[in-house]
Length: 99
Image 1 (cartoon, rainbow, N blue to C red):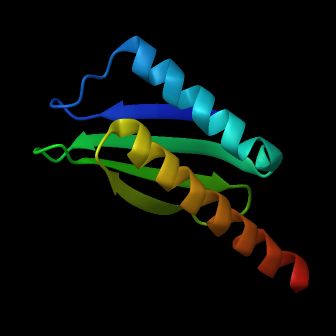
Image 2 (spheres, rainbow, N blue to C red; image 1 turned 30 degrees about the horizontal axis):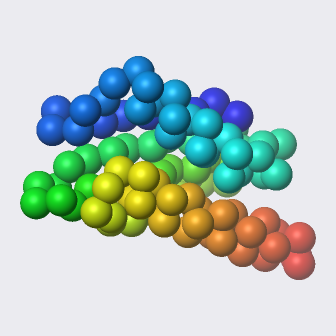
């Protein structure tokens, strides 16, 4: 599973932030690592203590899809987004297995 982190100019996109977010993504989505080919994380600062995280997943043989979440901190935005992504992948793979 390849993980790519992107951030806007207003978000402090330090190397530590990229490493932390990558570790969070890998830990949260590790059980799907055989099906996931690529994950792209987009972080942005919406101003006024608002941050947004968008995660796009590319699963082998499927069209890419994304989920997004807003939070007061980058960690809150990423955590919420990863929870949504776990649910989305579970339901997508569940539907495929059911066929």
